Each structure stands twice: as structure tokens, then as C-alpha cells.
Length: 298
Image 1 (cartoon, helix red, strand yellow):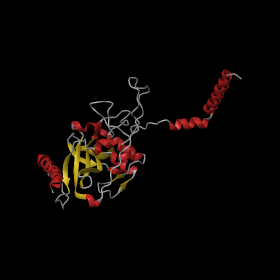
Image 2: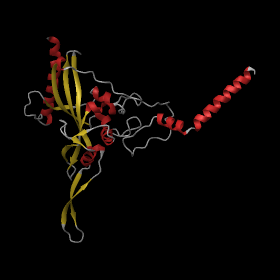
Image 3: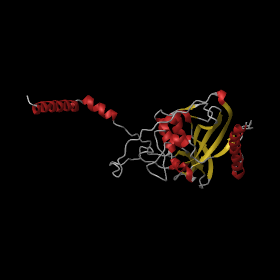
Image 4: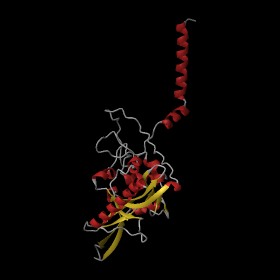
């Protein structure tokens, strides 16, 4: 047998093996299971049926970097602060972006709600994490109630009726954030850590004026970091260079103002409202920064 005949025999054998593998349903199922499956948080959001075309995009596999452990013996200073994020500020634009293929097809609050529905994120009733909320409890909070006067067309009698409306992500105009500021002797610097995130729903009167803020649920952020790392934020400067929600929150790229601190606050009271409250919050933040400077002078 000459060398050409040997090559022909080998090629024919390889073709037979490939054909058998392709016809095997187990191999087909295995190949389908290995293919990346994109999950979207908003089922009404429909991804494009064609590739981008301009860029050869790949599936982004993002992971959250693990926090280093802070030993209690290394903690020289710790203070807890409560902040508010106003999504109407330009720096907080990612919170209200409606989403695309890489952001998950939804706004930030929709990502949290989707994680709760899938059992990936746990919801609590407050930022003390005293009571866990079920999916039904969260859905009940999302359906805002509206009471209106209804007139019977036959009798003319007027009665008050309460109806439930549909949840609109744009009604979540504020997020509550609980942060711990810790000076770690081992790291030699002040380390901020987000502990809790609370979406707040804005409610309005019948005349359209603002009534109050209603906390929907609270998420224990350290447990949600791995889930949030799978979704990218909106970048107004560059459509390609995007960071994950975990990186965005860990690095405090959002704009927020302080409403309360644990410093000299036995009554657990918030700062005053309006401009005076903003000044108090600013002074509280400056006091934390000065504490870090004082550590280096000792």
C-alpha cells in the first residue's frame, strides 16, 4: 500500500467517526448544554436576531473579585453610614438605563427582582435583616395600590375603591445604601464596604405631587455580588468599555448623600431635611476622611 492509499484510509476513518459523533443525540445535547445561554431579566426586552456585524463580539464571562478578610484585631476605626442615591443625577444614569444585551435587558431594580425570583438573591424587610421576604411578599410590594372615588352609574352612589397598578421601574427614583467605613491596619487605609441596598418606590398624590418614598425590599450586598457581576452597566462614554455592577458599586462610582451615621447617634435619628441635612452629611463624610489622615499621624 502506497502513502496515498494510507492517507485515504485515515481520512475516510476520520470522516466516519465525525459522522457518528454528529448523529449521536447525546453528543448533540452535550454541545447544546455547553453553548452559552444568555438570560434576560426583562422578558419584554427582545434581543436582536442578527449579530452585531461591526464587531466580532464574544460572550463576557465576568466574576466578582473576592473581598479580603478584615480581622477584628486589625480594625482601628469603624463607622456606619446610611446614604441615598438619587437616580435623577447624571452620575447615577446607569440605574435607570432600560438595558441591552450586556446589561441584562433591564434596569438595576429589575436585575435585583429577577435575582429574587430565580432564587439567586435573598430579599429582607429592612436593612437590619430581621425578616426574610418571600417572592410573594416582594411582588405584593411592587404592586402599588391606588384608591379612587367611583360613582355608580345607576344609583349615583359614590364609593372608594382600591386597585393595584403595574410596577414601573422608573418609579424607583431612590436607593438606600448602607456602608461601613473601616480603617484596616493591615491594609493601612480606610476601606468602604457596602452592606445593604434598598430600592425605594416614589408614590404620588392624585394631583401628581410627591407623597413619600416606600422601601420595597433590602438586599444583603455581599451575598449579591456574584450575581451582579454577571451584568454590565451603561457607559455613556464608550459602548464597549463597560464594568460590571459589582465593580461599579465596590468602587463607589455612584453619587450619594449621607442621611444618617452611627457617630454619636443613640436615638438612631436622620439628619435634618433640605439644605441643612446635606451640609450635615457632608461634614460627616469629611470627619471620616480626617480619621484616616489622623491614623497616619499617630
